[in-house]
Length: 397
Ligand code: FEO
Image 1: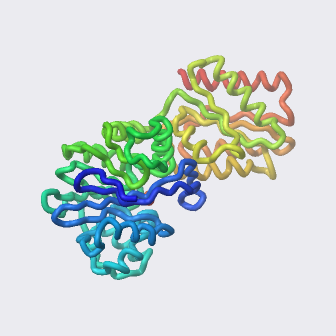
Image 2 (image 1 turned 90 degrees about the horizontal axis):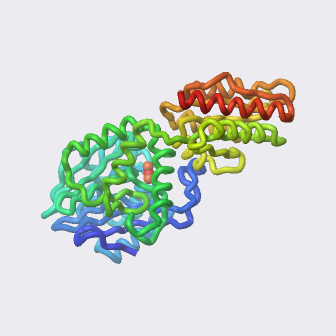
Image 3 (image 1 turned 30 degrees about the vertical axis):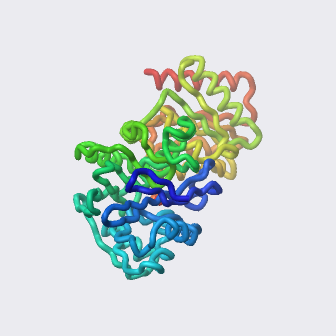
């Protein structure tokens, strides 16, 4: 159902309560998501973004309840990944000549995905589209998080339509940030940043500073996923400036695979050692085979250091940490420390290999790692505690 935001702006998107994974299986979405599209009605009418393809007919049908489709003068595509452009094919069956405003990269992506010769209008930063009393201004935002991305600013109502930027995978009937559980929504905003935007943090920092430098009055930020930032929209802008600046809290996250519990025992003893030296440091232990990978990555993002453990299996390391390492490599964490640990029976290559992968991923290695044969006895567990103490002292130095 459409939801009125201002006299001129109406939300016409789709809440996806069922969504549990996004980007295939790459990103878990425990709390669902939404695909936000917005109808702007002035003397001229603009539709900003659409929804994911499985909901295309529902989207067009509901849009028709809100407006005669032929009254739509412009479609603005801030970003053309299928979760926002998927309903274009169905929509343009009805209004095939409607101009589609997007960046040059956006046009290329739409052509590449849909192979249609639509009425594209390329825009660049600073280009404007007058709707009557209000004007849309386009701001290119490449790599936030695709090369085609742009933001659209609406004067008069002072709304920034930011597409993926400032979004959250968070389904809610409540449209606004002040009407939902703040803590869980902020967790989803953080998880979204970590798993989607973190590799592009330098671009995020530059773009946010550029927009702040434009001196625009921003009363609301309307992203393409999750709730609208109506109450203190600057709070998420401030968070982005923090998150984009090699963010970390006083936390160490210990992530491990374990086959017969020896590596788990090592991890727990290391955690005890860290806590003995640094009781105010949050230490989290996460079994890579049991915990959600994107939640683990969110904890890594929060941390000063990642301690990664695995037993040696088939002359290498476990499947759980292997998958995580590939995601960690891609997410380009900055200014974090790391160390490896793990048990082994005979060959024992895992710790050295984990250390190499972590270093290749940009982590500052705290030591050469700790490996132990078979099941750790009391003396070995004490050695693990000492290892944890040394790590805490190194982090506090
Ligand atoms: Fe929400 Fe990059 O699509």
